[in-house]
Length: 260
Image 1 (cartoon, rainbow, N blue to C red):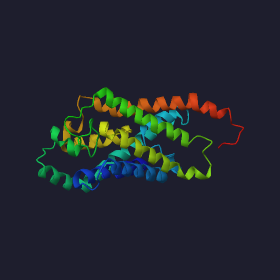
Image 2: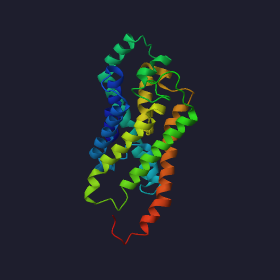
Image 3: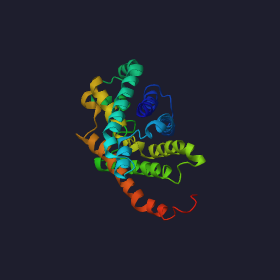
Image 4: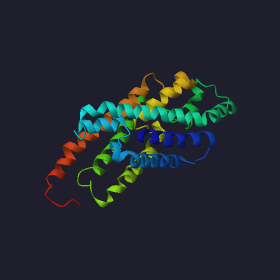
């Protein structure tokens, strides 16, 4: 449910921007994603800790905040929720997408249809940028890993035991959403800032099934796996090790002191 809300609200923000110019500027889209993350966390955090992201779940497992036995159920829920969100989005906007393609002479399934495929999955560089902008696969991988590492580090910090139970704990989802907003605002021109394998892969697979075919995937081949799956997973694990091996030991030394 949490991942469904995140992907539906976030990708719908992209959809209305691409199709109707409903939002002006990258920051408005980034804020839409940040609010989607915030609301999805509030909706699901007391039910499932609101991971919403396979990279976050894997990082929590590596850091021993969650048992390995729970990971398959979390991953299944995340990928199914994201796929269902993409299906509902297409049900609502499918006609508008077809009209947009006809108006701009876009043949679905060709490289030109990246302009509409980007509603579902990400591409590097962002298809909305001028043609002269080029982003290598290595740079895209680094961007996704860096953005996810920043996000996961903040999640770990905001859910660390000194913060749990504090009056301002209720604001943690808002801070996490704000971090997503800022990361997207910085990295979206490079990779559209996926940061989440479920958010990228499930809608991308739906788009491939819905007529975009190979055009639903970026070039070179399999870069959607190296950039948008491996990138976030690597960044999340690095952040988990950094927090548990460097930051958390400093906190444990002060476990008998009042947290501030």
